[in-house]
Image (tube, rainbow, N blue to C red):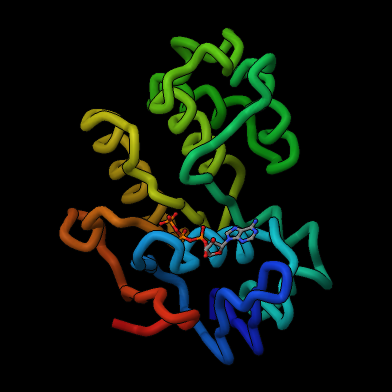
Length: 210
Ligand SMILES: Nc1ncnc2c1ncn2[C@@H]1O[C@H](COP(=O)(O)OP(=O)(O)OP(=O)(O)O)[C@@H](O)[C@H]1O
């Protein structure tokens, strides 16, 4: 089982946002749909290990997010819907830092930067980037290392058609290598060429299988 969630409850300041009593997801690609404010980003961020919550989240029945924080985070990557970077740092510097944490090789960094066209501008400060340029940096970092699960929040917003095609190709390539994906999107990724194993609707504080 890729992901096992038990007694999951996420609240902000005692306001409950999402409850998942029990969920088992085998390796695969999952799409989380839902209206603005339904809790999609909160769910992905929590699985990515960025937010506190009540309950348990296991990866491969081996690593629990709070009990084994380092090996868990080494295997779960995440790209924000609207990434914000310290504006004085270059993408190159940020990518090097994340690459080290994710144990990515120089070759992998160089390949991804070239594929996504990030190497054309990555030495300049991120404060000078358009939103699409920032988004491509976040997407690049989600592919670093050897993740078992890649979480992409609104992966298609602000990127152009060419970058979207490159992203699809990258996802296909990793799917073929056994990597699982969690995608949150308003856009109809279900109608795209991406194979989606299961769709969930995030609604009324619950995850419903569609
Ligand atoms: N840091 C926070 N503090 C308090 N409440 C928050 C915080 N972040 C999100 N929320 C609330 O949690 C709920 C879920 O927000 P979330 O961003 O997860 O939704 P979403 O489904 O990703 O929305 P969108 O499609 O607009 O990105 C919303 O009601 C939001 O107001």
